[in-house]
Length: 172
Image (cartoon, rainbow, N blue to C red; front, side, top):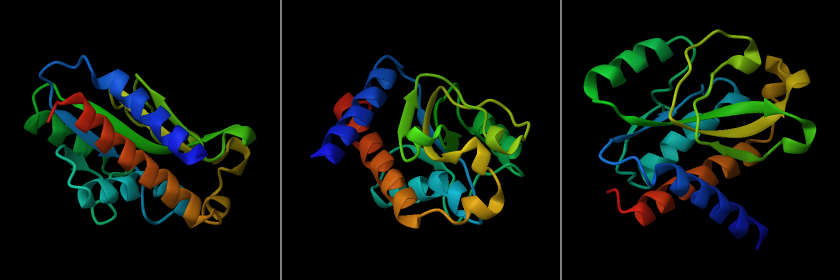
């Protein structure tokens, strides 16, 4: 029962953010790498969205991840191929101990790589982040010792919520 309420809450948050985007094309930018378990939330979500036949263009999958080394290049591709898109950015994040495994939806952009002290461009009109650890744990060893099941559940929940929100919005 708790998972259903949690899923519905995320879906409603997404729906509230996308309801007034008018004629803007929705792009999914799923950020992360499959090389670090704690950072594979974005690519895994992108993979699930493709499996679920998401009608949006998706950048970032397990096969073709969007990460720190290629983010600027991908943003240029999006800018070139899409006129004024509405970008939903998905990324793993760090937070407080009591926030681990929570999914946050914000009607705002995110700064990918901030937890690793990387200086990357701000991305997205809507951001969805899954909290995978605390700021104190931001070392590669700890982020590789996370539960794949927890990352999997968050990615699946985000994917289902996006698909449900798109279906309810009648955008596609």
